[in-house]
Image 1 (cartoon, one colour):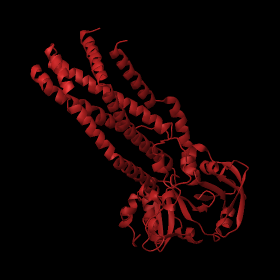
Image 2 (image 1 turned 45 degrees about the vertical axis):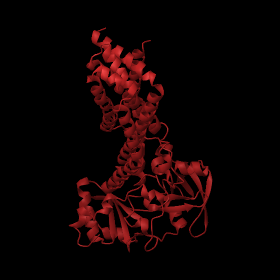
Image 3 (image 1 turned 90 degrees about the horizontal axis):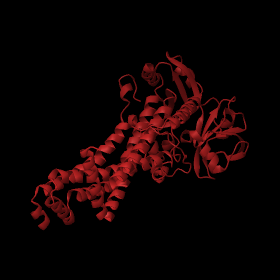
Image 4 (image 1 turned 180 degrees about the vertical axis):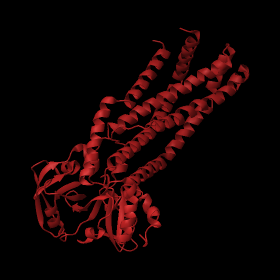
Length: 378
Length: 108
């Protein structure tokens, strides 16, 4: 073994023995440090994974959705509206969509009802999202009754439960046939909720939206890029809110770490004095303390990061669940696809490991360059 | 065992575990399949939003709601669903339709 390596190993041995002498204090610091890294890493991993997943899956949502507004409120699309759009160059398909909300007093939750063509869902049948099926105890071939807003009772047979993997998108979804949808909500014939337009060329989408706004002034086109932008901002906002809530804890930790790292206790000062008196060089003392900072901060970072990964991707971010759930009775249970932004992790590493290691050095250097006798007497 | 050997092996194990989490090929294939299935589901049903908050229409479908939907129960209404504080309004709803502004003859 090279003398340099042997020296470093001895320094680490000594550092560990010195840390062991103040066991409680150092373990406390390590726990607090790990917890802070855990919370920050969980937040980063969670929002990044949710943001990437939303961006990826919603990238195939309709290019343009056309809503009709009456007195600033969303209104039904009347029968001649689709014809009024006429032929627009670049629009491949125009499709009237039927969907709406239903409040279920059994669960005190809202469901999203959506009509599908007869070849997908037959009259009298429904397909339900996995969260809804779980909460209502439904499985394929079970029947369920809903009282419509007109007071009539409708009974449906569950033809299928949607995949549990899609819960993030389909938690509260009820797919039923167009006939059933119209009967259930007493939807006027020929009316639709909104219109979905498929546009072949992405460059054309804005032009088409502009044309729609001018030919149908009461319409409101919603572009796919706006949907994606909404989700970007939703998660930025949420990350910001949690960070604001955590700001107090982070500051408290910063003060603790700074106090621990920069202020030397009398015992530590005496220790440095003795080391200098028995022949340690200033460089050795600094190296020994650097090892101390690095060992603590690196262990805390690695433990915190691994715990955060398991928490977010294997335990469904249980710590954030109460914040996220809000009043949602039907909250999807989802496992996020692990996507990690290397830059974010590097930033976290830089802001947790380096400041601590660096903060340790200044007071040590100051104590180490002073005369051992003065240090020991102080 | 020397304490330093113990500490360095501990750190090495932790680093390897973290690296293994960062590059998990088996899980990646499964995850890609799940994402592709979900993307197909979105395309098939024309979905626009994540089902995170189902209590109000502007929290269930934030991308489809307009800026006033949280306050339109009656004139002077206040928003009363707490998830509204977790969901920012659409960024484009805060700005007057910038890309369309010059192109439309009537206001949006």
